[in-house]
Image (cartoon, rainbow, N blue to C red):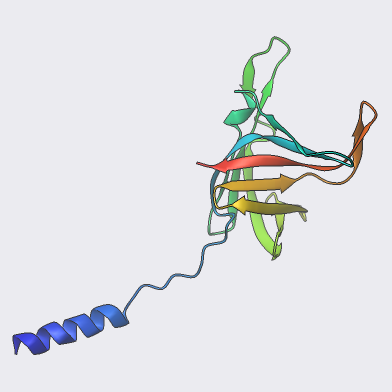
Length: 146
């Protein structure tokens, strides 16, 4: 009888496995690490953020909520919370690497994110630009999973 109960328990235990839907790679708590610029010629250039900007975080939740915290350096080089940019957004996945980020009311804006590894997220920032005569194809903001 004990063997039958044990066998029944094991069958129930293994048949009721908690299979969760795979988590989207964007879900998690991310901290700004720096930027990477992609010049038209030459190798990409990484720049580590200063300690103030490294306080910037983005927390993507499974329920489609994003809480983003931003900082800036004021005129006297103090690191300050940017209250105008720190807020809650909604996020939705549009396609494989495109996510729409919007505040509660407007239509939002599509951003491209990529994940070079499970602990790194690149937020792509638009198209070509030029600085000091050097042409860049694009740049990314690099976040690390906390």
